[in-house]
Image 1 (cartoon, rainbow, N blue to C red):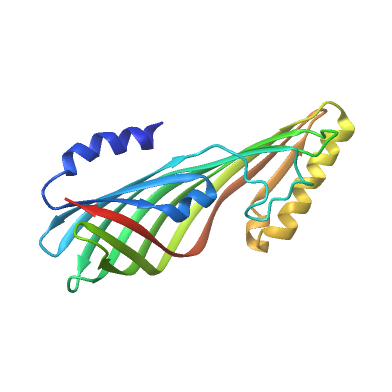
Image 2: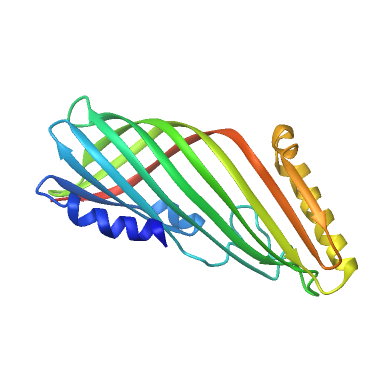
Length: 221
């Protein structure tokens, strides 16, 4: 996994006397363990954070219900590189670039109509504002309360079924889901093809905006 390998290569290079290692607890909700390293040079710093996917079920979260699927598996891997500048010891601004891949697998409800596998790959550029406060001697809270991203994404979903009727059901499920959840300009980028027992849905590259916010807990060396 290239993003995890990058994390372990860069970590020893960045560990100095002015380094903070952080953890993003809110990312656990979407099955990602996200770790960040910040290395200081005066009032500026270089940041690398890596998200490690936790491939487990999301039934009961993020709008996924038990009556929709008999099994799900979902995880997000990512790497983000940022430059941060502090206006004082608390306030900062931070431009960054990010790459991430969302991967999922689902089995449609019992009796099974088919198995679905897919991924969405994105590259993003962004800018965020934040505030850092010391909680204890070497422990800090970092809140990035306003961030804007512009991203480019593409992806693919494939399904396999046991009968042509189930394959037709899976095709209509993908089309109906896209109509309900994707903006019109993104729907135009989607092509769905079906043969006897399988469906392939390809999402061509499209641009999208995103608002980012959150927090992390860090330990300063």
